[in-house]
Amino acid sequence: MEFDFAELAADERYKLLTSTIVPRPIAWVTTVSADGVRNAAPFSFFNAMGKEPPLLAIGIQGNDDGSLKDTARNIIDTREFVVNLVTEHVAHAMNLTSIAAPADIDELALAELDVTPSIKVAVPRISASRVAFECRLHTPLQFASGQVVVIGEVLQAHVDDAYVLDAAKLYIDTPKLAPIGRVHGRGLYVRTVETFQIDRPSPVKAPQ
Image (cartoon, rainbow, N blue to C red; front, side, top):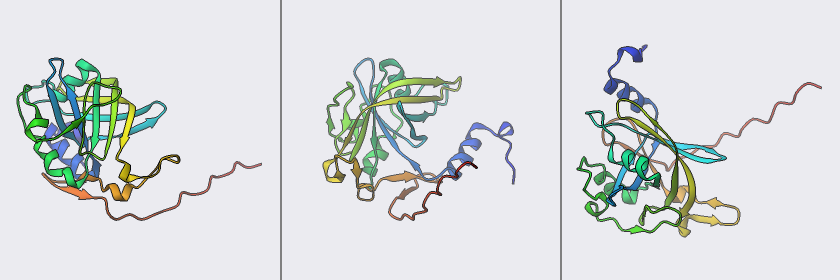
């Protein structure tokens, strides 16, 4: 079956993308507005984009009227945000912060989430998150629909000591972290508990 995206409505494209690009990690983004209102919201159009500079990218859809989501507006206005990663023990709190709410609502308070001050940005991180990345806005890509792709440079990483195997070697106990991801369908998530290994092929040498 072929699907011509030029002939599909935006919601139809979204359905195909989210049904096939799985699993997707979840960026639980904390921001603070220019007026000082805290915000938290999850986004699964998210991943790491590079190491030099260290970049994360987050796709933030616009509101139905084409205006910016609070998260996007806050990041553009203040140029700072924190990406908190999501594990199963905070899944319900994360889901609560996805609620559609006015800009003056503090989702962190709504979900009864404690926060910890960040080191390099003014935005706090979620205390219960086992991994968090403090970020400065590197590049925003804005579209007429209100959609924004935020590219952020990671300034500081926080990893709960219980999940660090060897700090000197930067070995993290990823299976123990037990991150979750988004899959197809409304409200469906996946646990990352089963893995398999395929070794990368050896480099091909050029003919002498």
